[in-house]
Length: 257
Image 1 (tube, rainbow, N blue to C red):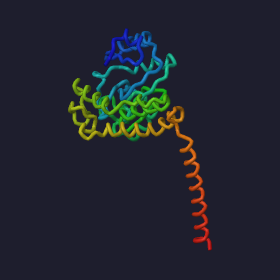
Image 2: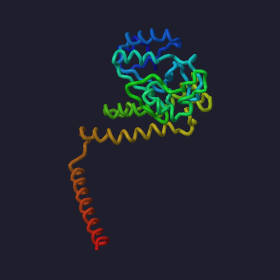
Image 3: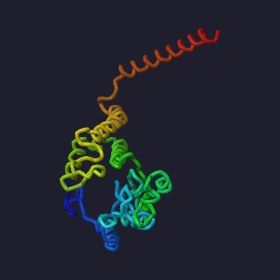
C-alpha cells in the first residue's frame, strides 16, 4: 500500500504515489521540489511517454496526447543536471529513455517519423536516459530489471509474484486504466487475463533466476553439496571423458579408413 511521504522517508521499502503537473511550467518546479525533498539516487520511467523533437507527446498510433500527459521529462532533465542515474523502459520508441534509438524508431515504427498530427515530426522520443531497456512489452523490461536486481542481490523475492502482478492489473482497471488495443478496463494489457500470458512470463523469468541464484545459496549454506555429490560429479565427468574418447575412436575407424 502507498505510504505518506513522512513515513516513507524514514522507513525502508515504502512506496509513495504523488501527482505531477500537466502544465509545462508547473512541471519544472514540481520536479525540482521532488529532488530537493527526496534526494533520489536514480530515476526510472517505465513506459512513460516522452516528448518528441517538437515537444509534442504522442501515443503509439501517432495521436497528440500532450494535453493529458504529465510532463515528467523534467525529472530526467534535472537528473542529468545533477549527475543522477536514469533508466528508461519502453516498447514503442515514444517512451522516455528510447531517444538513444530514435533514428531506428523513425525507420522501423510506422508512426516513428510521421505521426499524422499537425506537428508532423513522428512519435520518436527526444528525452534520453543513461540506460534504455527495450522490450516487446515495457512490462517485460520492468520484469527484467527486477530479475537483475534479484540476481545481483541473491534475493529471488525481489521479482514480484504472479499474484502481485494480477493485483496490479486489477487495481489499474478499477481506476479506469484501459488496455490500449481493446479500450476496455478489464485488467488486460494486450493479453486477456484468463490467458495468463504475463503470469507465464513472470514465472519463466523466475525459473531462470532460480537456476542462477539458488546454487550460490547452497554453496554458502549447511545445505550445500555434500562430498558424496562432489565425488559422484567427478566420476560422471570421467565417464563423459571416456565416452568422448570412444566416440572419437569410432569416428576414426568408421570414416577415416
